[in-house]
Every structure is written in C-alpha cells, then in structure tokens.
Length: 440
Image (cartoon, rainbow, N blue to C red; front, side, top):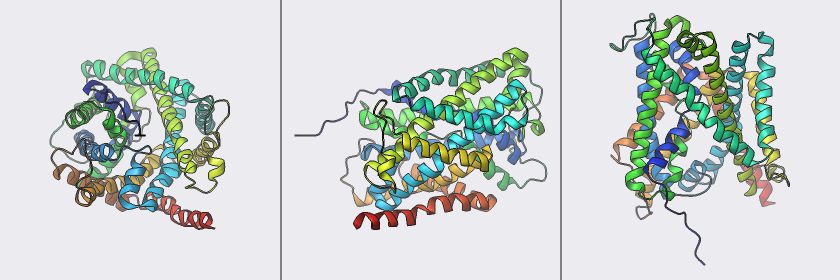
C-alpha cells in the first residue's frame, strides 16, 4: 500500500502570507535599541537592517531546497541528520530544546515585563515576577490543548500586524524631530566601522528569525519551482522594507542617544506621534504581539523534546513523551521548557539571550547551507521539486554571511559565544551516554 502524499494546494499568495506571518515578530520593536547602541549612527542602523534582510533572503532561498527535497516531520533537524548523521541532528535538537526555544521565551517574557512596567509606571521590583508570570501563563494556556494555543496564536497574529501598520503609515508622515541621513554610511563617534557594522548586523538577525521554516510548505505548493522563490523573495523584501521604515520612523522621532539601549523606544515613539492615550493603545498592541510571539515558541517548542522522546533519542524519554489524556499536550516537555526559560530569565537580559540564540542557531544554519552542496554532489538523482535560483552564488552568500555572524560574535562577545557552545556541546556526552544506555 503506497504512503499518502501531501496535496499540492498552496498558491503564491498563501505562500507569501506564510513567509510574512512566520518572520514578522516583536523583534523589530526592541532590537533597534541594541542596533543603534552598537552602530552609533542612523545611516549604519538602516544599512544593517537592509543587509540583514538580504542575508535572510539568501538563507531562506537556500534552505527551501532542502525542505523540498527532504519533506520530513522535524524540519531542519532531519535535514542535518540526513546529511551529516545522527549526532549532528541530535545536537541541533538539543540546541533547540536547551537554547533556542527557552531563550526566546525568556527574552520575550523579559521584554513583555519591561513594557508592562513602562505602561503602568510600576517599580522595577516587579520586573522578574511579571516576566515569570507571563511565561507561566502561556504555558498553562497551552496545557489546555493545541486548539486553545492555536486560537491564541491566530488572534495575536492580527494584533501583531496592527502596531507595525500604524507606525509605518502614520510615522512616515509625522513631523521629523531629528534629521536622518542615509548616506554616507558611517559609524558613531569613536567607534570602529567594521566592529560597529558587524555588531549591528548580528543584532538585527533576531527580528528576521523564523525564515528557516519557510521551506516546509514546499511539498504542498502547486508550483514550488516558481512560486516558492517568488514568495521568499517578495515576502522577505516586503519585511525588509517594513523593518527599514519602522526604524526610520524611530530614528527621525528621537535622538540617537535616546534610542541607544532604550527598550521602550517603540512605545515612546508612539506617544510622540499619537499622544499619551494613542501611544498607550499602540503599546498594548505591541504587548499582545509579544504575548503571541511567546505563545508561538511555547506551542512549537514543547513538541521538539516530545518528538525526539518518541524516538527514544533523549534521556528521560519516557517522561518527555508523556501527554495529557484530556488535552493530548506533552505537559512534561512543556514544564521542562518553562523551567529552563525561568532560569534564563534570572541569568540574562533580552539582548544577551537573543544574541546567544542567534549565534547557536547560525552554527546549524551554516551547516544547512553547506549541506546543499554536499547533497547536490552525493545525491544528484534526489528529487528536488525546487532548486535554489542562482546556484551556487546564493548559498555561498548565505554561508559567508553566516560565518561572518559567527566570527563576529566570537570576536566581540566571546563569553556569550562560549556559553552557547558549551550548552550545545553538553549534548555530545549526553548523546553517547544515552546511546550506550540503550545498547545495554
């Protein structure tokens, strides 16, 4: 009996919506603070956002070929495993469980709390309790079932786009308080050009996160060879333009020194444009957007250890694959994820956590780009419904961009890079210990 195949029903518009819905997130509202802090200038800030978008386009186009050729549940973990073997695939799963999802939940819970304190003028002592309550409440909502978590995701998706739309449309035509020069591209006073630019590029990467899932719809598209590259290029070009405009609005509304390191830039800009009440309404929209982003990571994140545990790939697999008999949710995996996220809330700031998760994931991203060349040579007969346009130039740009991000992080944030490498590297003895235990 032949296996059922995916129906090819997705057209260009649906694919385009998927690209934009997957990538657009809360990062654009808050990463401007760190981008401006490290670049020190408006021109370099905007250049970093644009280059970040171009690099993301090359990355998305490259990984989409792997997704189309290896349409397996598990996504990037399975692409790595298929190309390099069990251990590298396990390490990517381990990094998702221990770094990527918990760090995202922790970082966004911290930013949620920061915005609540600002909105209601609460004392700083409430910062950590609100962050923990935020992460805990979303986990409990998801324990009510995938349908409830999915419904929350659908509702917050609309709210995610509203504040961006309002800031873009009204911000562009609002009065400029600061003159913004796009050229020449320069670093701020007393800053090295390349150090500033590379650090700015790294900071933008969190806002473009999500592109790695774009290719997952390739197997269900009517014309993946034509529509997938169009959806990726058009979607990410639109996102890059939107991000550049949002940042332009911030930069023309407030002085550079006021934006640098200020995680309340978006809400303060909204108040300048719309007044006190209007600004607070936009801030509430941003809060809903952040809450939805945390929900997305919580919903999908707890299913990674569950999926690995069903294959008995992890220690404590028996516990990690436990699901609720009423709601069919992997509650033990969800509790582990929440526990790691809360530990991270105590240990790191928003920027530290997001930079660490970007660094760790780009190690595997570079391996994915290289996998493209390995599989083209090793398995030329492999069915590829979609091939990277501009091969080999596009994936080479993605590889060089990825290596640049990794080298810069190691050079400028050595402690953060070592922490990320250690957390990922712990997976190696865990893997061999578990394999040895299974063999007995």
